[in-house]
Length: 234
Image (cartoon, rainbow, N blue to C red; front, side, top):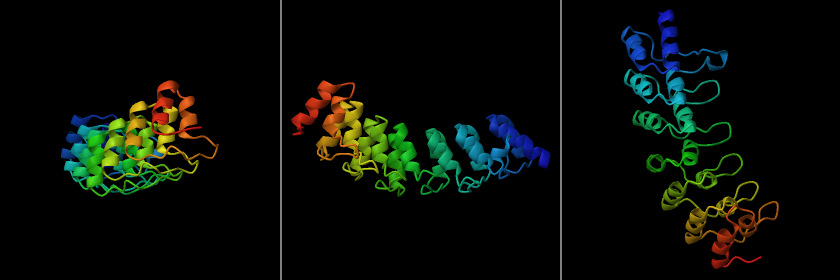
C-alpha cells in the first residue's frame, strides 16, 4: 500500500488527474502525506494539488474524502495555498467542501487578503458572504482593500467598499489606500476612494501625503488634478 501511496503522491504533484483517479480506485490513501522533497513531507495530497492550481485533481481528491482543513508543519491549509496562488477554481471547490476561511499565514494574511491581490471579485464576495472580515489587518497593518489598491484591482476595491471596508485605514508606515493609489497614478481607484470619503490630508511616516505621492507618480498631472479638485493643497 505504501508504494501505491507514493505513486499517488507523484501523480498529484505532476497534476495527472487520470492516474490520481486510477490509484484511488485501487484504494490508495487519499489522505496520505508526503512529498517529492523533505520540505513537503507534512503536505497532504490536497495541499499539493491546491498549491499548483490543479483544480481537476483537487475535485477528485475532495470527492474521495480528502480532509479539507488539515494543516501542515507550516500551519498552512490547502485553501491557503490555493488562495496565495490565485487559483479561483480550486478555491471555489475547497469552499464547496467547507474549507475554513479564517486561518492566517505567517504574515498574518487571511484568505480574503490573498484573493484581493488577484482581483478575483466574485470570490471576494463569496468569502465575505461566508464571514470573512473585511476589516482584518496583516502584521504590517494592511487590509484586503489596501492590498487590492496596491495591486490595481479596481473592481475588487469597489466590491470591498460595497461590503463595508474602510477607505481610511493606515498601515504601520501610515500609508493609506489613497496614498497608495496616488503613488501608482491609478486614477480610477483614486476617484473611487475619494467618492467614498477617502481623506487626502494624512501624512505617512516619511511625511508624504497623497498629493506629494501623486506628483511622483507616472501620471502626475492627472493624479494631482484629481486631488486638487477634491480640495487637496500643499
